[in-house]
Every structure is written in structure tokens, then in C-alpha cells.
Length: 257
Image (cartoon, rainbow, N blue to C red; front, top):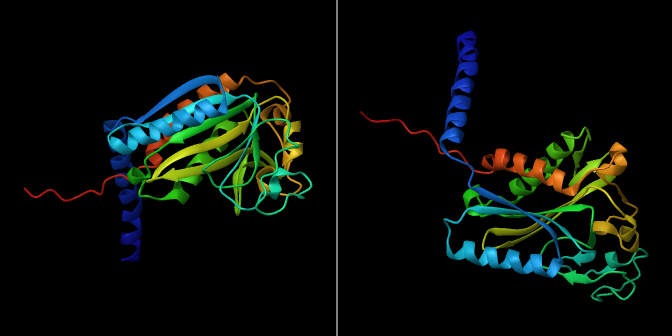
């Protein structure tokens, strides 16, 4: 009997996979992707807040993914510990110390410590209703990480996740950061993928609060140049393909005839 039971398992898995694929074909991706080019951080933040408010008022509104670059800026999340704003860690707890920074600082409603955004970095802001995703923030974070890892793989850069640390890593070098805020189960903020350009502004802080972390970029890892706009098209294609991985497929119910 054991042989009979095991022989049915591949058939059951195949049937389940066929149902999943059929469901995907019947349901188009409910995601709109926007390439916004270069945008000031404050303007992008206002735009995100407006979209979150619209989605809260209209639950049928599609999820949105904003792809863009920023002018140089530092950000820090909701934390009383501001020590990551200094490369020496000498800023006292509760003190917002930005006088030494060469670019503006924004304290925003995301998790995490200080980071830098600027030209050559692809910013991705998925504004996603997690009520469509089982209200599972951890699953959402892993989805974002996998999206970045698959994007990098398209350019023959082998990135991975690291236990207890968010983002995408090439060995022990951080190539992409993630910081998310959630309002009424709707996400904002998102990821920053280092594509090319100057990484020295990271030297002014403790990036993401991780001491002695080495920041890297696609340009450094691959030894060739990349366009941020080009990488954005890859992220767009993969996001549209993978968005349904966040959605729970409806359970199949027997049909009574």
C-alpha cells in the first residue's frame, strides 16, 4: 500500500500545480509599475503618502510600484537610537545628529537605521495592500528580497539572503537594502539597489546600523557599467511576473452537481 500512496503524490502535485497556473492565467497581475526618473526624496514621500491614502479609501485600487532615483539624501527609521548616523557611533541615544552629514536627513516611518540614497541607486517603493497577502509582513519582506536576488541573477551577480539581516548580499557585501513602513496594512518605502556611482556617502554613517559592513554595487561586482533605467525595466518585468506569489491562491472547493 505504501507504493500505491507514493505513486499518487506526483499526480497530486501536478494537479495542484496545474490549478495554480490556471489561476494565474485567469487573473492578471493587479500591479501598476511607474518609472519616475530622478525625484527629490520629499516629493517621492508625498506621492507615497497620497497613494497610501487613496488605497485606504478604495480597497479595489491596484497595488503600485514606484521605481526612481533620488538626489543625495540620508534617511533613518523609527528608532530612539541615532548612533548609526555617525560612522564613529558617537551620537547619543535620542539625539538626531545630522550636522556632519553632507546631504539632507529625513526621519521617516519605516523600520531600520540610517542609510543613504542617491544617483546610481534604484529605489523601489511597492505600495501593497497586505490584506490581499494574508497580512503577512515577513512573507512580503522575503518576496522583496527574492525580487532583488532574481534581478541581480539576470546580470550574473549571485546574491543571497542572510539570516537575521534584511536585504540582498554578495558574500558579505551588501548590495541592496530594505526598509518598510506599514499603515493600515498598506506598505510604503521599500528597497534601494546599488547599481552604479559613488558609494562614499555611506562612509559618513553606519549603514543600516551594521558595523563594518561593506557596501557594494552592481558596477563593482560585475566590473561593467549599468543604467539605472535599464535595471528598472528588469525589476518591472520580474515584479509583474512574481506579484501573484504574494497572493494566496483560492482553495479549491468540490462542486456539488
